Length: 121
Image (cartoon, rainbow, N blue to C red; front, side):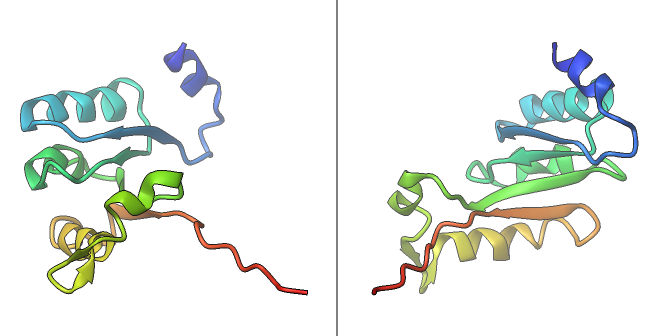
């Protein structure tokens, strides 16, 4: 079903595998190969919390994008992402650290729209 769906998308559309992968190195290598070679997605979402070796296989693909979770918009995001870690919010440390692993040519971040301005009448 996934293959049929991806093949149905026009080739001029940017594709994102919203897979949120991030596992031990060898498993990540197989995920990267599957999403980037088998299904030919342009990008994939990944979870960075297992460290560089879990993201490295995705970052090694040329002309592909890694979209790293940093600050998500789900209700439980504050459980960890807004916590302080060495003087910064955890999501800030994630972005800072992951930027050292990739470049502006292969790396993006999920930064959810989580704050709503409420006007008091």
